[in-house]
Image (tube, rainbow, N blue to C red; front, side, top):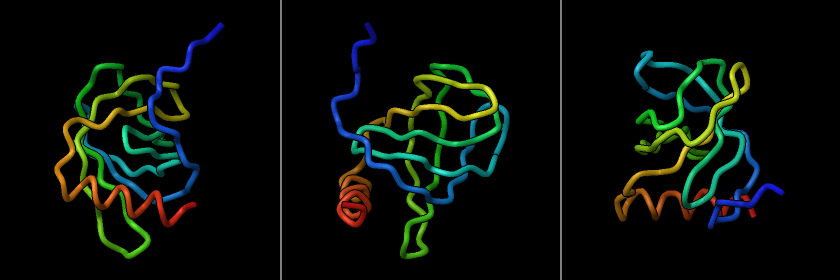
Length: 102
């Protein structure tokens, strides 16, 4: 049996994104998001534990930059990210994104 590790409910959405990791900068899409993390639909292969910076294009057209750590990777599909120490402003922006999707 697979035990759920997430403490926040993920909300499905489809937003443009870009990320910067050890392999450089890449384009991607956010498939789902919560206050604690997201799933990034991307072709790039990242290793669990890798630190990345991810920018999410909000419906307003602004970019929200977050720092995180890769928690899981599915080569050719994407990877899961847990956010690392978001600021108060980042938390407010994430809350607005989540509220706009419910």
